[in-house]
Length: 436
Ligand SMILES: Nc1nc2c(ncn2[C@@H]2O[C@H](COP(=O)(O)OP(=O)(O)OP(=O)(O)O)[C@@H](O)[C@H]2O)c(=O)[nH]1
Image 1 (cartoon, rainbow, N blue to C red):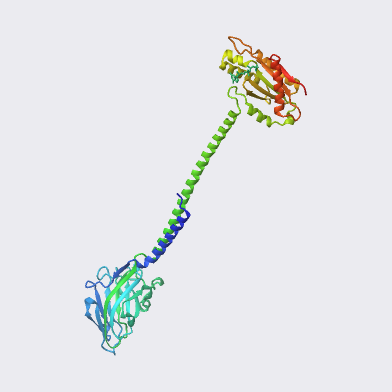
Image 2: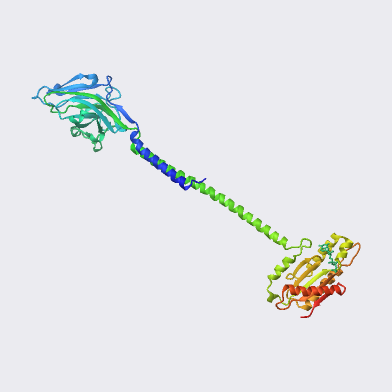
């Protein structure tokens, strides 16, 4: 069954609705998430510049809960750094193998800050053998993002696009241009830094959560899958249609062939029926209807002069009575053969009924028609119809020439009158209507 036009519209509408639904659904798919704050097992460092003669000191408030403070204890001494680092390595201390962030696009940061500082920095270090040296931790790419403290009152989502490679790291290294952009392929460390030039006093920080978040299925993959589904659907639909129409065409071709052969059969049947309807079954000669229809098709001007010869078997009733009906039939058939063998191809010959025949001879004058009649009469009379108990069979013939513009019936009647005369004269003779 072909898909009807209204069904097609429904299918198309459903497919469109499904597509819209799938596009909208993407936002509700569960996200891929990874907690970077891993609890007690995680290796964490507190760093500050007091150890290098600076004026800042770092202290854990609660190391397990990543709560620490930075104290600017001396405003005379420089303050360069103070913060906390979380190792993200797969094996503790091995900073060559970290976490690949490429499956994520957002970082969710939840941090409590009690400080009059305006900014802190979020830091990542990425190890890449193309520019990092396993024996030098400082060769890991330094990626940072300054964040306003007042924006951190509540958890925030940060895109990785917001990060940049720290300038001091680039300045100190001979880095290829392609690595001057943040590289999150193998992140080994995360840090919260209280920034340089720390205000005097105490600054407290508690890192609650740092979570990586990304789509389970990337937007490009999702839309590409929808597009591919459409393309496959269209291809399948076209294939289905091609197969369907090919099948239809084959079916129609088969039907057409069947109809053509049936048409030929019917034409054959019609032709044989026509031939049967125009043929006398006993003698095989054309019947009255065949002769008259053939006569109507004649070009009268071309066939003049034309003769009608009406032939009747003499005393046929006697033959039937003495030799039986089937012998009578045989006589009819044999006389028919004699007539056939003694007429021309363009003569019209028919068994007119009973033991009577009509022969219409185109292009035949009266002398010729009388000769033909006599020839027939002789042939019949000289034929041996009954071998064992001979019995003479003869015919009487009435001959009439068609006059100009004369009808079939009129010339037939005149031939019939002549035949009647021949019977009256004792039979076995031909009478020509010569009263032209
Ligand atoms: N066997 C046979 N007899 C037929 C057929 N058609 C007509 N007859 C018979 O032919 C006979 C014709 O008889 P009539 O009309 O008296 O003519 P006739 O005996 O030939 O006499 P004339 O014509 O006067 O010489 C009838 O007995 C018909 O039954 C036929 O197809 N077969």
